[in-house]
Amino acid sequence: MALHRIYGGVGLSGKVAHVKDLPLRQLTSCHGTLAVTGRHQTRGMAADTSAATTAEQGTSSSGQAVTSSQQQQQQQQQEELPSLLQLVSLYGARLTTAAQMVWAQVLQPGDVAVDATCGNGHDTLFMAQRVGQGGAVYAIDLQESAVASTRQLLQQQLPPEACPQLHLLQGCHSQLQALVGSNVAKLVAFNLGYLPGGDKGIVTAADSTAAAVEAALEVVCPGGLVSVMCYIGHPGGLEEYERVRALAAGLSPSYWTSSELKLVNRPTAPVMLLLWRRPDVQEQQARR
Image: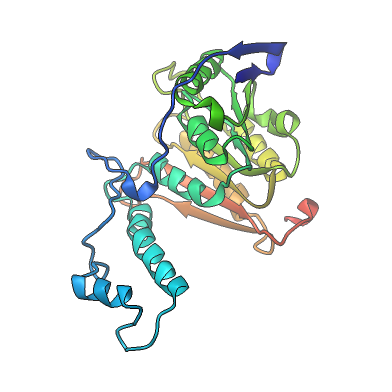
């Protein structure tokens, strides 16, 4: 499987290793990261043995018949609700992990995804695993070292039999539409700030980021999502966040749903902005 870098026409090929894609409910971690297990003892959600037995017998607590589809729906709700609580409260979870929880609800096999600030490639890898062989992933970064790190991670961890079309692009995220196209992506994600482990003096800026998010609104397809992770603790970060938030707040609710997730008792914590394009909206021009 070849990984292609569009700028300069350079192509690299390499063998990759297999990584098992575990369902979210089977992931466990600690020390400030997401903890999602198969069973959560949260108030009102712990299923006892008698309730489980009743479900297996195909009856509800009121004695009414419960269909197989209803049982499956109830089981799915029990599995998803703890994860939703983790997402909403962010207790024991990193916001970047919460972002991937959201993306997992959007991306399907065969979709197109864009990592507009690929950094070290971890989000790119997640997207590639979600869309699979029939999909496509664009990874963009201004720094050549970031593109190289992303390429290396994909070569090491992505199994060739599940590898989507990969486009690793060195360039500014403000040129997103020219690099990717219009009305094509199910997800466009930004992780702003500086490259982890890199030069902290090289950061995303308010003007170029605002232009990039504007472009993302043209790139995302109906039912798609623009996800923006903003960091406000470094110089210029607050201004960048405020520009993006103002843009999100100005979108017409007839065509977009804009939301924000942040920790209000941690003033310098990252903030996640989510811009959902309604699936029944086909005319991009009518978005405002």
